[in-house]
Length: 71
Image (cartoon, rainbow, N blue to C red; front, side, top):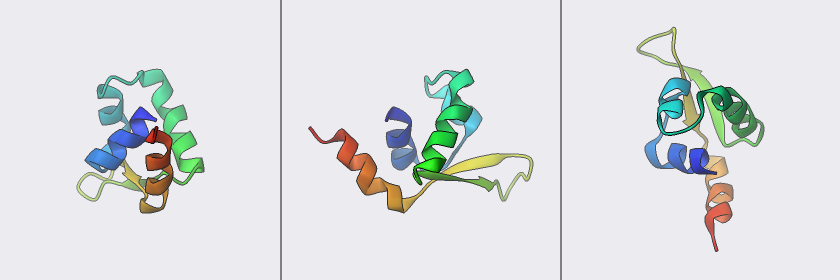
């Protein structure tokens, strides 16, 4: 939930940048795969550096993420 909130707040990040935000590096790929399956994010090639892949939050997932954080 923290990573989904971070992506919605910050915008796109690479997997490496996501792991630098206090998330275990080993779990980042699994985490991204789960978010992708739930339509929270998508992977795109970085237009400035084709070797990098950026993780982009999807607008469609935002209401679902907000619902997770409601008390």
